[in-house]
Length: 93
Image (cartoon, rainbow, N blue to C red):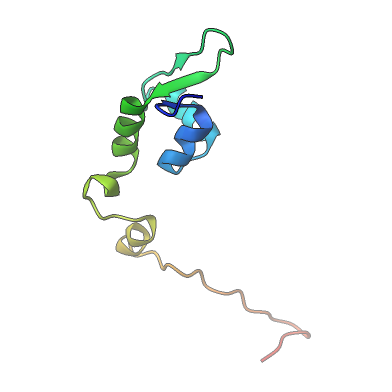
């Protein structure tokens, strides 16, 4: 495939999502629909579309510094889950 064209897998890797997520985003209108290759019927995005999708899905690339971990801790959710403790005759101290 020409390097200025993005398949679903290549676009997914470019934006850090799975191919299934890219297809779901396209179906729900979150990202623009891909052009279909006339022979293979595979989805194809242009470089300009891929860049626009990346800016939309990755706010950190546009200058906003927010990660999933910082969002969780900002909401008061501990970043490390509590460990389960054992009780009963086989519990260790």
